[in-house]
Length: 201
Length: 203
Image (cartoon, rainbow over all chains, first blue to last red):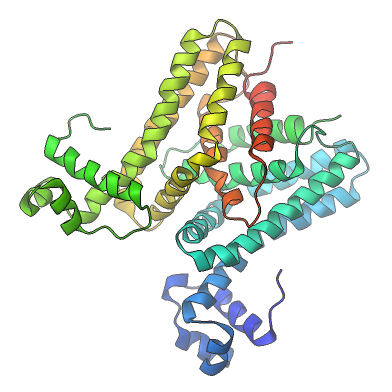
C-alpha cells in the first residue's frame, strides 16, 4: 500500500471506512471532516478538491483486492517446495478469487476503471496503482519461471495482465442473470493456470 | 440489432453513434442530435421513452458491433477450415486484429458501458439481452468446433465464450497503467491458450 502523509492517510482511511456503510457517491466533505477531526484547511492542503480525495480512496480500494492476491501468491511461492505444491496453493487462491462473493468487488473495480478512462486525474492515481500491481504479479511469475515452475516462453508482464484481464473481464457474465456455472469457470481457469502460465518446462 | 426498428428511430440512434465515436467522453445533447438528424423533437419522444434511452441504444449498438463482426469472421473461418490447424491459424489472425492497440478506444468504450449498467438498470436489461445473444453465438461456434473434434470436449462452450470476451475487454488494465506491455507478448499468450487449452491437438 502507498504511504501517505499521516493526515492524508487518515482522510483516505475515513472515506474507505464510510464506503462500508454507504455508497461512495453519497459521502460528503462535512462527514469526513467531522469523523476524521481533520480541518478543512488541511483537507484542501492535501487535496485539490474533495473529488480528488474520493479518487485517491477509490484507487486504494481498487488496489487492495489485488494486493491481497499478491500477498497470497507470494506466500504460496515462498512455502512451496515443488511445482505441485505451488499449483495446489494457486488453485486455492483461484477458487477463493472466482467465487460469487467477489462479484461486488469486481463490479466496483470496473466502475473505477471506467472512471480512470474518462478522467485524466483519476487515470494518474489509478495508473500508478495498476502499474505497481502488474509489476508485483509479474515479479512472482518471473520468480516461478526461474525455479522452472512457470512457462519460460511467456513474457511475465503479459502473463500478469492476462491473469488480471480475464478476472476483471468476467463482469461480462454478470450483466445478465443467466450466468455460467462457477465450477465450469474454475475448471477452465485451472487449465489455463496449470498448462499455459505455470506450464512445466 | 436493428431488426424491426423504425427507420426514424435508426437514424436517431446512428446520429448518436456517430457523435459518440467522434468523441466518446463528450456530453451529447438532444439539441445536437435533432439538428444533425433533422428529426423533430416530437418524433424523438415518440420513439424513445426519454433522451437517455436513445443514448443507451447507441451505446449498446457500438458495444455489440465489433463482436458481431468477429463472430461473422470466425463463422467464415470455421466454414473454410479443413483441419484443426487451419482453424488455429485463422484464429491467430483474429487475435491480432481484435486485440490490437488500435482497438483501445473500443475496449474502453465497452468497459465504460458495462460500468454504467451498475447504476442504470434499464441499460443493464437491454445490454443483457445483446450480451446473451453474442455469448450464445460464440458458444455455438465453439460447439461446432467440438463436434468436428477440433476443440476441447471437456470445456463448457458458454464458459469459453465468456472467457474470450473477458480477457479481450479486461486488457484495459494494461491501458490505464503508465507503461505498457509489448503487444506481441500478449498475442503469444493468447495463441498459447488457444492452442493448448481451447483448441488442443488430439494426442
